[in-house]
Image (cartoon, rainbow, N blue to C red; front, top):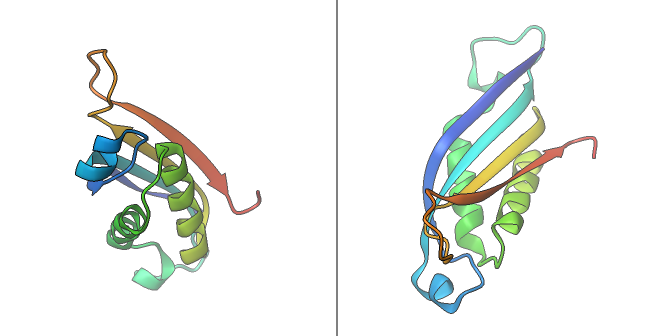
Length: 121
């Protein structure tokens, strides 16, 4: 049985980017986490048979705070790796990172990346 557990639009503060001001001042990022979870056929009404979305938020915040990344692609990749490592029920995860204050000359709501990683490669 496969379930989908997701977090939409988690706001985190980070110092990611290639520009010096991004690294020193930091900025807001919005993160979506979408997990395909293989729940046991006899899954009970217990947290041990699923993935806690609050823990997904905690992990995203920890990964962002632990390192300064030049690229949000790397942030997304590291978060996907961390989720697969920590949550054995997650088979596939898609991470989307949006950056609303990208230092570009165009008027956009945000720019971003999405990465998908699976346990099977």
